[in-house]
Length: 273
Image 1 (cartoon, rainbow, N blue to C red):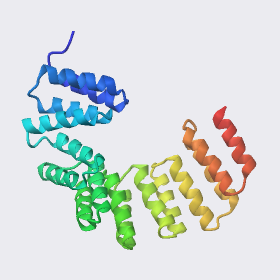
Image 2: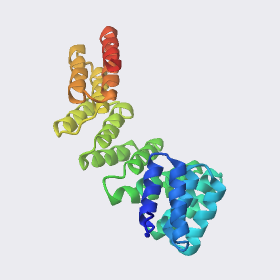
Image 3: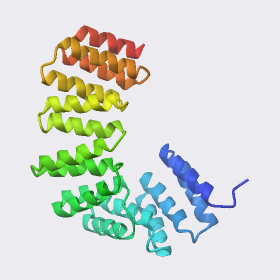
Image 4: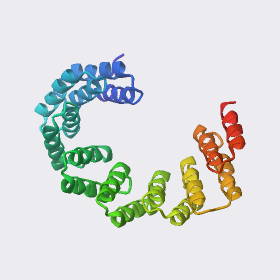
């Protein structure tokens, strides 16, 4: 039996979209539109699913219909902005993003996408404002935080970039924030000791990932640590993340970093076993 409400169909469209089952997503969204043609969200979801499938002309019709029903249809406006950018209509895309941000908060990925569009058209001041607004909302704005650091680094404002990444890391229990911070210390600031200290702090607070062990090994190698100590990092990476394929890959790379090619080969073989 078909549900009488459209919400289950929108949810099905969304879950199918996440699994990249575009036809199922389109069919579910189309059912929602058929059941309630006056619903803004149904048309917005249909447009989103059609765009994901590359059916841009149909997507545009659905998104414009959503906005016609409700001029403040935030998701539809954002999706239309993405579509205009894909069509290389950059000014129209930027204007739609501005319209969306005047209605509500842009999600992290969309704020970063808008800012990157502005950066490509040399509107760096506006891009910085967009990114700072996004990063000030919460500590979970990773895309915006990384892009803001990239923008500042490109303008030789490394101390500002480093401060932003450090604040994001220290206020987060997510390994990605610590990876961004420590990698910037290592690669942009050439401060291997600070990078090593940052990773060890994250690991001591139970924030862990194979990526962090890889950055730690690189930092230790750059600061001249003994190869036996660096090899121990590879072993700890495997102990902590034994069931993750990436742990074996990074452990192998750590052994290669210190020229222990036989050990690296053995790790790669075990990963494939």
